[in-house]
Length: 118
View 1 (tube, one colour):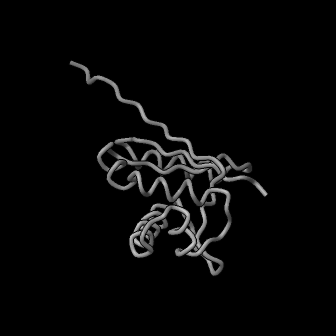
View 2 (cartoon, rainbow, N blue to C red):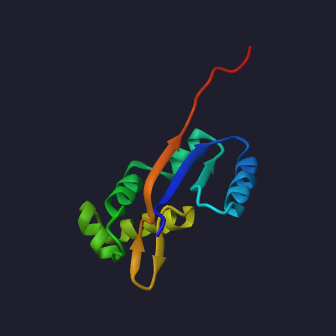
């Protein structure tokens, strides 16, 4: 089984990233997956420190219940459930009949800030 990888990018042209990802998906070998955000504000608004903690806590652990995840991070079950729901929507976590898991062995963040041309 191929270990899955995810690259998170900040890209104002997220539609181009989506097209590039579709081309990669058509390739015969697995080349990873991409999650793109159009602005730093969107990125940091959706992937808060607590949500990153959930991703990290679930990475490589297999399927877990929400209650198990809450215990791992010492947080309230209701709040963990809310954050897990958002992370599933983003594709960083996945849910099936066995529970919730982070399917990615590696997550890379590609972010660059450059001065605007004068």
